[in-house]
Image 1 (cartoon, rainbow, N blue to C red):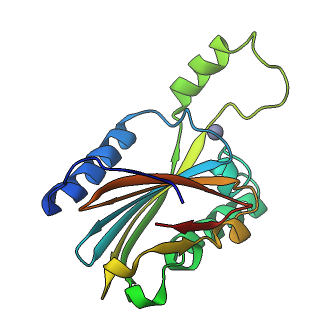
Image 2 (spheres, protein in one colour):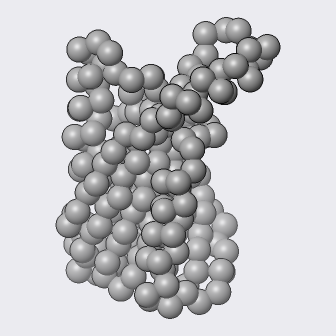
Length: 193
Ligand SMILES: [Zn+2]
């Protein structure tokens, strides 16, 4: 599945640098504009080390993006954070890769209030239906150590079973041969490289 783009040869040290730079950029920018229902997963493979960067609108993960207020909402966020700390239950790799999780950092990043207010004013004339105009995202960084990362030829996504609001996941895989991108969806939750 997916189109394979040869982005030129990336040297081992360069692969993680690319992902880290993209991540740093993301932290600086404001939350959004993201597309509700479309999360992203970037996977960098360097020898037997795999790094993943996951970003999802709060809407996809807990069904809201405002600050959790009720006990039920707070519990939904806590449970989601806990489940996102176990990525190998959500993004299942072939057993032959022998990958184990060595680190997981998961956070919720909310749009700051100033930007929120400015955006709300600017949007006054826009849609009046009850849309959430305060955005937040779940972001995660994972590191895996594998015994044979070359066996990472497919991924299955129980992610869609766990998160009922998630509809699509844009997956980018970067390795020494280049970069490939493809979308997996609730209806087609399997990726072959
Ligand atoms: Zn949003």
